[in-house]
Length: 376
Image 1 (cartoon, rainbow, N blue to C red):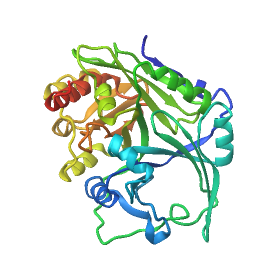
Image 2: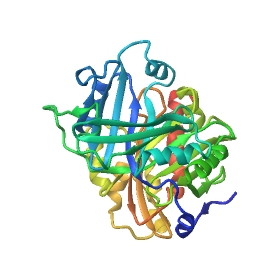
Image 3: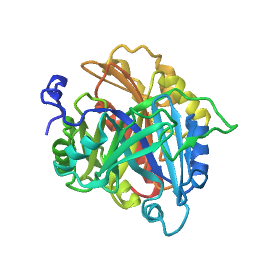
């Protein structure tokens, strides 16, 4: 299978029955939301935004919503051992439960997707308070991850009913993070194509980019990936599955430790990756390291770039190009003790691709971390 890029014009050739305006928020189930919120504020520069819990009438769980520019994350923790979220945490550890999507009509989004085979997670409902209404619905996707469809055009309050504005005296500055560029899912052996078909049939996405084990491989391991995009390109979900190799791939390690399929990483955009990563590193965020030899032939490979090479080398930032420009990207180490979810920081300078030219250096770096854990 060859790498394939589908022309953008073809993506909008048919009527989009599920128009999406982007990612509304990403919800993580975590063991201690109060402490996790402190971490994401301190390390990543997210800001207090909203809270729900016993003080707002929610008796069985707490949720902190943090914001940075257009990127919102919700951190949710159950308040009893019998809560269903407790079982999720016991099995998976901290991880993404909800990829919420902005829609014009949450009721229609539910009807469109369930009529095409989507499995219902949340029947359409309307939440109301003195600030208006939020309509929402949801369907299941891979593993225990769900998509919620959020319609908030008639709401003027903070986040949604059931939440109150939340501010504390501890407010570290932002780090330049802007919005969710894409979210990557890891699925099991031979499950990539079934989930590609799900996104095509149920949600009207297109497969805009494909990589096989010839594209994404090292001496020891390999994986396959397909990038799914909605009609306007605002929402992209790459899907990875393992491929045969001499040793265990990063996807296999994830599946073993997460104990199932789930979100591998969240890519967040920035307009100045050097400044953002410099700040993140100074706050304790750990990134994968890249051999300095990667930069010896960088300009020969990608051509002229606006950035100086030395800061990129010092920080370990990768660069790749496509027909429309170039991109800069870097990947954190897992942000919890299980080697599961991590973050990507990405700056696009015209490029629409996902860094194929960096795969070998990136995955060799991941393998070095796997070897240290004894999981390669």
